[in-house]
Amino acid sequence: MNEAILEACGLTKRFRSKEEGKRSFTAVKKASLSLFPGETLGLLGESGSGKSTLGQMLVGLIRPDEGTILFRGQPLAYPFKGAPREKIQILFQHPEVSFNPQLTLRQSLSEPFRIRGLPLSDGVLAECISRFGLYPEHLERRPGALSGGELQRAALARILVMEPEVILLDEPTSMLDVITQAQIVDFLRRYQEERGTSYLFITHSTSLARQVCHRIVRIRAGELQEEEKELVP
Amino acid sequence: MTKLRQNKAMLAGIIIILFFVLVALLADLISPYDPSTLGVAYQKPSREHLLGTNDLGQDIFSEMIYGVRVSLFLGIFSALIVTFVGSVLALIAGYYGGAADRIVCAVTDIAMAVPSLPLTLLLIAYLKSGVFSLVLAISITAWTGTARILRSRVRQICRLPYIQIEKTLGVKTPVILFRHVLPNLKDILLTRMALSVSGAMMTESGLSFLGLGTYGQKSWGNILHFAFFRNSILRGQVWWYLPPIICICIAVMGFMLVGYYGQQKKD
Image (cartoon, rainbow over all chains, first blue to last red; front, side):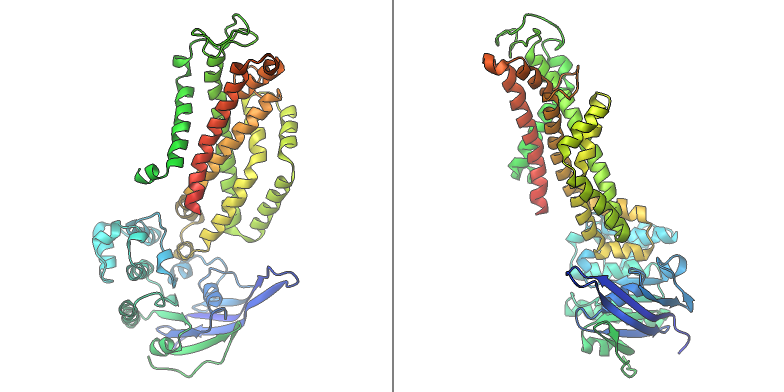
């Protein structure tokens, strides 16, 4: 494989403990990993193992206490700015809270277009969502009037406007029905083949990780375990 | 509108507030006399003077009508300042967290620890007498509760995925705060503002009753002040001291009912 697109070098994150007597607990301990172009890296761990914290550090949502993050070999400063900010995106587990409840889908989807300075029209928005099986009438609805599957597909459509090179998938299918799960996994696979996008797939399901990931890294109590051998998805 | 009809408490609150707002706006038209015009003192209620006259012969009914203006203006203006200050501090603390949050929380805790009534009295004593001094004194002591409650809600909202997604998309902080966080606080803002209006009206009445209010301007607290200090209770002049008490209670209840609705919805 080529040079890593995203690297974590010795990332550590501590949180203050609210319990008396305990000053802090370490959620992630000196974690190092590399994500290569066109690769799906599985980050497997139980609830509370630190996988989401590590993921959120990698997308720039949490400032690490120690360690460095490299994007295409360049160290990133928190908060991420410029190209790295646009090119590293995240898809969350809970689609129902992935959109501002006060805005319509049209308003939410318009945001990445405005940020990138792309032309925006009804046709563009309709095309943006059509490949995810959504229709123009969905654009006028608020999140409360859309199903979980529709929202997750819309959330994916929104981040893809940024043309990301790395997508952090934080258990993106765990709240969805089997058919929508399969549609999203299939779409992500095809998109990766077309664009060479890299995925960091966070999950607690070993079977799902084995099904979709090229490599799997386990995280236990904040520490990364040895990588499993390379898998063929 | 259907929801509003179902919530009778909220509807009653809105009707009460609208009634007093209308009275304040139309005071010049509906008031039978100029409240500062002097006449025969201590008259009992009659057709000419519905609530009688005070010690200077001024029509108490007209005083009550003009008093709505000062009480409402003070309440609403103080509540606007309290809500604005509380919201700004809550947004800073809740969004940025860390040191900003700790500083705001520490300042709020200190301000809450200071007894508000003595501080208000002290401020009134040092500030130049007038409506704006009262507004300032009330606002300085009343913002803490709003800031604390809003800060908790802002923290909750900022942890939601949609705010995290906005950050990763590269949306600028002011846009996140004013387009994505603030509109989601509207229920709690309405509640806090309604409760702040009622709190400010009570404080104004209390200060005016003590003689520290808006001197020279008619307010319900002022009417009560003169009624009490001219021995209206001993003289049995119910028509003088009871109307301001009833009006203060009804107006405060109106704002509290609106606040109560917001609280219910939040719960």
